[in-house]
Amino acid sequence: IKTFLEMESHEERIQEIIERNKELEASEERKRKAKQLELQRKEAARTNRGIPSRPPSYPIYTPPTRPAVTETIDTYEAEKKKAFAKPMHTRGKGMQLGKKSKTTDIYEKVREDLGPEVEETAPLVSPQAATPVVPESRASLSSERAGVQITVSETISAKVNREGALKAFEVKGDLQLRISDPALTKLKLDLLTNTSHGAQFRTHPNVDKALFTNSSIIQLKDTTKRFPANNAIGVLRWRVASNGSEHADVLPITFTVWVNKGSDSTTVTVEYELTGTDNLRDVSVTMPYGATEPSVSSFDAVYEVAGDSLEWNIGSIDTSNASGSFEYEVVDLDVDENEFFPMSVHFSKTVPFVEVDVSSVSLLEEGQEVNFAKDVKSVSDGFTIE
Image (cartoon, rainbow, N blue to C red):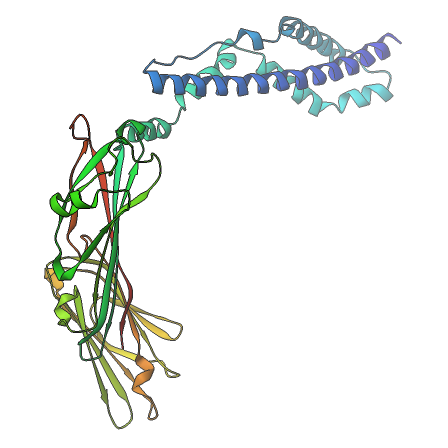
C-alpha cells in the first residue's frame, strides 16, 4: 500500500511539474516578447536622440514561485530515485510509472530551463547582440537624404521609315518638385534651359512665368505662399514636335533596314548608328516575323526569340560601339516583307533630350542654398520603324 501510494504521489507530481512547466513557458514567452518590445523602443530612442542603449532588466516578469518549483523538482528527484531503487511488487501502477520516460524527459527539460543563471540571462543578451544593423542604416540614409527631390521625366516618340528618314517625332517632358521637409517649402529653383530643337516651355499657373522667361527661375507668383510638402508637383513642362521636316540626325539614334528578297529566301539587315554624344542604355529592337521563324546569321550583342518576334538586346550604346547591325534570314517563297514591320525601339538616356537642368535650390527669404537630389528619366515611347 505504501509503495502504491508513493507511486500515485509520483504521478501527481509529474502532472504538477508539467502544468508548472507550461506556466513557466508562457511566462518566459511573455517576458521574451516584452524584452523585444523594450529593446526596440530603446533602439528607436537611441537612434533618434543618440542615447546609447543597454540591456534592460525586467524583474516584474520573474516568476515568484520559481524557488518553490526548484525545491519541488529536487524533492521529486529524490523520491524518484528511492522509488526506482525499491523492488516493485505491485505490477499495475509500477508498470505505468515505468512508461513515463517522455514525462521524465520533460522534467529534465524543466530542470535545464531552471538551471544555471547564465541560461536565464541569455535572452537579455541575445536580442542586443542580434539587433539588426539595417534599421540603423536606413535611419542614417533617411537623415542624410536631401529634403528636396527634383525629377526630370521625358518621353521620346518617333516614326522613321526603312531608309532611316524621319516621318514624325515628339518629345514631352516635365520637371517635378517634391519637398519632404516642411521647413524648405518656401524656395526657388535656378534652372539651366535651352530651347534647342524648337522646344516650347510652359510653367505651372501658380509659378511666376515672367521670372522663368527672363531668368530661368522657378518660384511661386505669390511669394507669401509655400510649395506643398510631401507631394510631387509638376512645375514646368516642355514639348518638341516635328512632322518630319527635320533630318533624322535630330534623334539620338537612327536605324536603316535592308530587305533583300532572293529566289527562295528573304534576308533582313538592321543597322543602327548613334547620332550624338549622349550615351543610351537598355537599347533593344523588337522585330516581328510571320509564320516562318527566321534564322539569325549575324548580330552584334545578344538576341532572343519571343513568340512571334526577335528581341535584339543591344544594351548600352556609346562612342565605343556607336554602330552595329543585326541580320536574319527567312526561308519562305511567299513571305511578305511587311511582316517584318513595324519594328519597335526601346532605350533610355542619362540626360534629357531637351536641355533642362537644375543648378541650385535656395530658400526664398534667407537666400541660403539647400541640398537637393535629382533624377533623370528620359525614355523612348512609341519609337517605331515602319
